[in-house]
Length: 272
Ligand SMILES: C[S@@+](CC[C@H](N)C(=O)[O-])C[C@H]1O[C@@H](n2cnc3c(N)ncnc32)[C@H](O)[C@@H]1O
Image 1 (cartoon, helix red, strand yellow):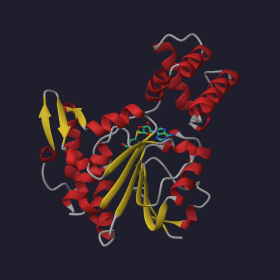
Image 2: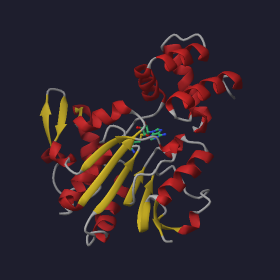
Image 3: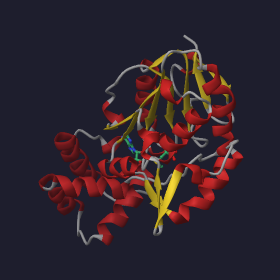
Image 4: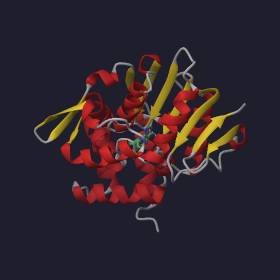
């Protein structure tokens, strides 16, 4: 059941769209409303109208709001069985290319980007890679560029790395400082970070692999369709798109133009 009246939600969505070009009306509404409700009570707004005024007047507050209402949870080598296929099959299949172009769409704080860089290093493909890592949220992009993570994240990241076929210990790639780890900044040598909003549909370039994992689950069907169209335009023929385990390409209008490379891991290949 909806928590807010349509009129106030439309007011917020229209103002945000006009000022910041992000269309929040295309997010999965139940989840967005829950987070909006939490935001209003946590930061003491008595109505959506007051929140909207604040967002329109204060760009920095808008960035903070976006961070709070989106879900940024991530891990290195998240879903290790998927990363094992990237290590054992997908990257080796691209090894003859002069350049391997990779897009992490919705990269959050960068753990996925470091995971890919580590794989590229271990497969001897690091120098061939050109990577774009993008997210809607400026703050997580800054975190990703810094590559500083909590020491508490190490056990799960290490476990995922080993399960995904990791050859060493992850500590080869970071140094410990107090309660944090600092990732080796050389891993980001071939990575360009950008703020990019998938809801605008604006393409960059063409890629051999697009990872957009655990992002579209928060979008409604219309936005999922638009984003799949954007990705299709952004892929070379025979290249790969990897989405989250709980996500699906089944409803995408042009799904038949992709083969199910690995349905369980949600890896698809553009065939036409
Ligand atoms: C749960 S995280 C996923 C991180 C990583 N891909 C993973 O699977 O672990 C979802 C990310 O999507 C980003 N996001 C949400 N809406 C977006 C949009 N319209 N355009 C680009 N990124 C978006 C969020 O800011 C967040 O960092």
